[in-house]
Image (tube, rainbow, N blue to C red; front, side):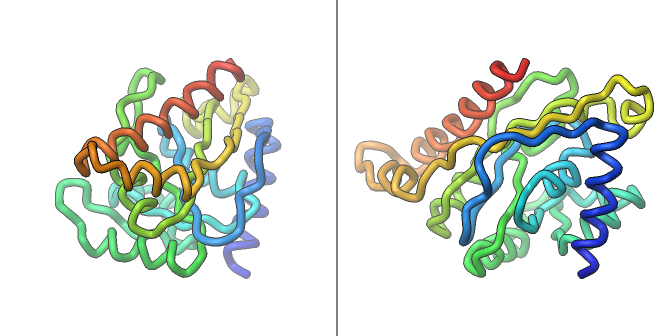
Length: 205
């Protein structure tokens, strides 16, 4: 109930001030990972508002210091992630979310882009998808790079597109390739995520 109210208010805000436009596929049922590019602290709440299903996040602990974003993330039962540590508790929490057939939002780059260009993906999303045997939906996000200030200029246009899922079958087929080591398998899936996001951004741009 609390989540629905917060989401409705935030969605109204983003549509009014950010002219938010959402395109692409519906988030499928069951456990699924939403993997988006990361250009702003606005990305988590914007992604949550754009999704047709509630989204849970592993979010860097620094985000919880911002009252609005931190409060919104807490309403999503987001788990604070310490990027300086090998946070096994966060990994277990993420796997539990997926095994409970919920939606997990992840930004594979691991940090915000400072110049708007996409960086290389870390292996977190690929690892979790492989372990939990769930699909990955690539998500292209644009318009959030100017943060909250940009929303009040009248020039910001938020755009979110959900791409075709990288299916469980595709992921498990890569996992089964005996000629690749674990790192290569995770790297292959991670690059596919970013390639699909990049293609959607190019079409939008």
